[in-house]
Structures are given as structure tokens and as C-alpha cells.
Image (cartoon, rainbow, N blue to C red; front, side, top):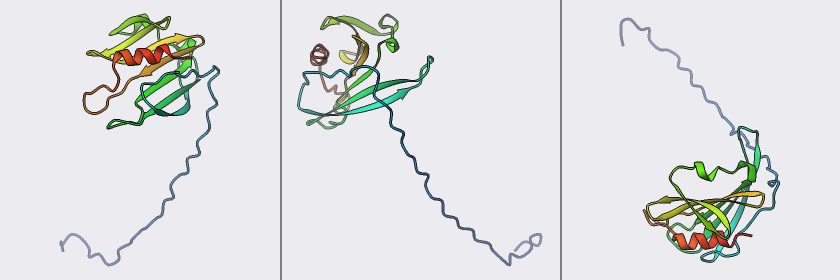
Amino acid sequence: MSAFAPPLRHAAVWTCTVEPARVIPTPVSPPPFAILRPKWLPEPMSDREEHRQLSTTHGPVNSATLHFDATSGTDPRDALLLLERPRDRAHDPQNIPGTIHETIGGHDVSIGRRGEACMNLSWVQGEVALTLVNSYDGVDHVRYSCDIVRRVVESMR
């Protein structure tokens, strides 16, 4: 013991129990447009639909995300994602750096590439702005070829 510190005679032990806060999700209503779906997929897939409210400079907007899970591969979850939002919230395809433009299924499609891989395909169809997102199946191995994701875009209805 130090000569400068008084001896410790009583030690107080505090315990408390913290109950986790319960988060009650607020359901988001479906977007104000008909959700489009591909009529053709490259393999058997299950799908999940998720509605989100996006914050924008013009206020909140409801959107939809379709998650397509493959039945094969090393990472089958979210093999393809399809993001849908109102047409007026579409990105200007001419102002997206690093993209190429193609006409696919009669639509002007902006394609974001990584090397030879087609990773993001964005276009407007009717009242809906869509983005199809390709994925990786393992390290540096793109799941679907450009020809395959083009065919998915062509099949959108």
C-alpha cells in the first residue's frame, strides 16, 4: 500500500441489467409502380422481394429490390439483384462515368463493367428505372457472362 492512499475498506459492486431495445420494423408500402420481373433466368432461382424507402433530395421514395438466389455455386445468395425505383429517380445514363451504352430489348442500357464483366445494367422501362446487378461466385469469378445478363434484361416484363 502506498503511504498516500488510504486503505480500501469497502468495495462497491454495481450490476445492472440492460434489456435490449425492441426494434419494431415499420412496413414500407409497395412502390407506386408495377414491379417488373424477368421472364427468363439463367438457372433455377428462388426470389425475395423487399420494399424500401429511399431518402432523396426530393424527399422519400418507395422502391423495390428483388433478390434472386441461385441453386448452384459457392455463394448462391443474391446471385442477381434487381433494383426498381420510379422513373423520375433514374440516374442520367449519359452522366455515369465508366459505363458503355447498348440497346438491349429496345432499351438504352448503361453497362458498368469491371474488365470484361458486365456488373451493373441500368435502364428505364415504362414508369420504372431498373438496375440489374451481377455477382461474384467465388474470388474474382463473375457469376454470369455479359450475354447472360443481357438476356435477363431482354426478358423483363
